[in-house]
Length: 124
Image (cartoon, rainbow, N blue to C red; front, top):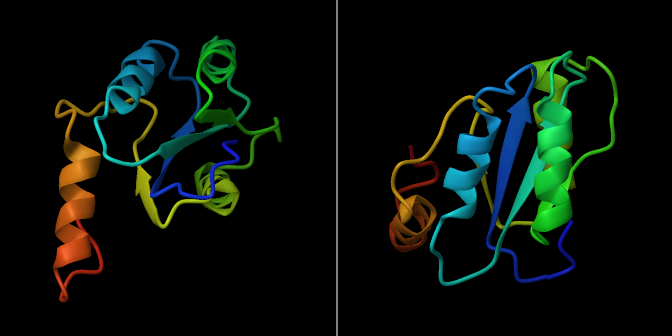
């Protein structure tokens, strides 16, 4: 987990048996271009494929990526809650372990919108 106290966004990735897609997911999140630091928190729920090893590889390579300790088979809700609790960002975003973001400006655009809109508390 990043020690930087200026984290604007925590991206929570909950994953289970998504070895085929997790690299694309992580690459798309890490390709985000922002004016501020963001962190990625991964909750891998003790799958039976190679998902955890891939997530560990990314956590070892990228300073802003944290793979949470293994707590076997928490289920998606408890896993997501542990990711949110581990985050330090002002805003929380989520990306499922089998999804990916095609726009490298997604985080920046959404934070800009939510920060300047007095009426907005959530953005998709």
